[in-house]
Length: 325
Image (cartoon, rainbow, N blue to C red; front, side, top):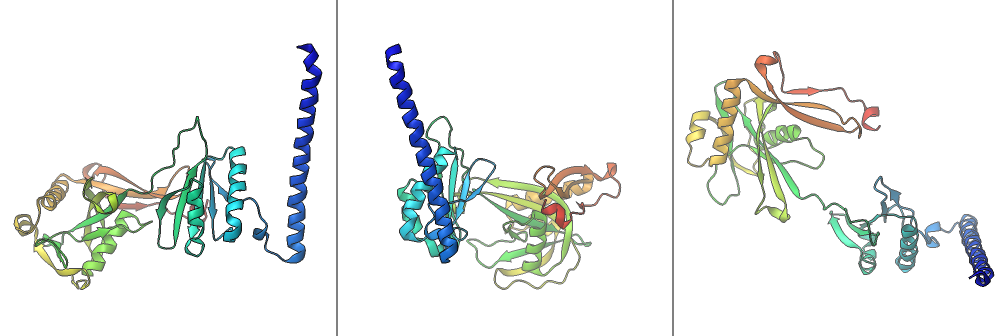
């Protein structure tokens, strides 16, 4: 054993020398490449070997084809070297946001084990989980729930605002409403939908209920439908010709017994009447998330008898600086 010790030490020294030489070679190549780009005016991406990307708190990296352009002819080699570097640095998830003009990247990414995560009108997002063992892939699925809103709008004469959709499978008389837009609050969505469909202006009163459907929804998504009570600020109706066949103020009693109103909408209105008679409200408070520092809406139940003067919507003043914190 002791006789082989000098041989072992000699081998280790040789390996160390090779690592030093390799490091010096790589450092020299990078610095000379940057110097060449500055002197020649050549874009650095033409010679770049590693994608920089943006890091996230989960030890992942996202590369955007707009922020880091790379010719298709160089993309495969740049990707190979980048993947090697990221594995050495224990990067976990790698994301490529590929815009339409760089669509030729897509098959190359697929050949290197990337999968489609989601797509929008102007880009596709592809991802790959790098750890090969000991770290289970926890890349989340893309958004899988659609969110909609419906509004119960009742005036001082106890009349409810109801609409008939222009396109339908069977005759219907329903609550105005629709889907929540990306980044939109459900209160704002309900107020917007009512105004778009009927031109009636409203303000928030209370959340009444929500329905969660799990089957038969578009694009393989489940569906959450929030029902809000809104107070009318105007009553003159001008229907949206694009979506709505007709809209009207109808007495609450007539709505509850109308043959074209389905049972779920009847239940929503009954719950609204029960809340009103018992002084129950589900209020909305808008503030900043304590750690993420992003605007959020918190909904909670309140009995008006225990909370005199309670209003449906309370908003803390959120400054631009706080939103960007």
